[in-house]
Amino acid sequence: MHLRRAYFIIIAITSMLMTHAPAQGKISLQFLVLPKQIQPEPVELLIGEEKTMEVETPGNELSPTYKVSPLSSIVVGKTIQNEEGQSVFQVYGKAESISASRQIILLIRKGKDNSDGFVVLPLNGELANFSGGSFLFINASRLSVGGVIGDKKFGLKPGQQQLLKPAANHKNGICQVTLAYQREDKWKTFYDTRWPTNKKYRSLIFFHQDPATGRLGIAPIVDMFMN
Image (cartoon, rainbow, N blue to C red):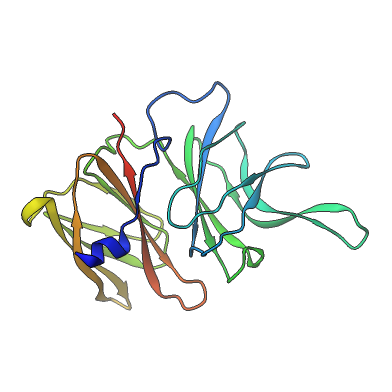
């Protein structure tokens, strides 16, 4: 069971994806940055003309919820001083926004540092049926991935996501988990372990690639389910 402890970080994020309505005229954003850093440096979110707000960039949990006015684009970066001593906003990454009142903004770091830039992926946080015991698999890699969890099978092309609620196939609510990726028409298993199921928790499983090596990894985030 040590593998389960190594890969699962139990996070009680009571504010995440809750069912109450957001403040009028506002959207809710939470951030996750991969690959994670030991001491992640925050970034700035552009929220208006020459107006930014600082947001946290955790890699092992979702950030706090930030409520902002609807944005046409999600733009992150940092305010720096140019050669003339003027403050300018350096863009690290941007993407068109999506029409969802709750969003998870996934930032894939292109290099070792934030200044190397990000791929920005806004995800819909309004997830129907995402209840306790559910697993949401999100493929943020450039590879096709798939696998088996408990009694359920799944397959995801790049950019796809799938919600599953598996039944345990071992004692004490434990699911056998086998994950694989496709490269040149061949499937290769890269992850084989056991995960627990519990009606008190729901899990987001992100597939991502290291920008330097291309190595495929997973980032499990476990959220306490609030009815």
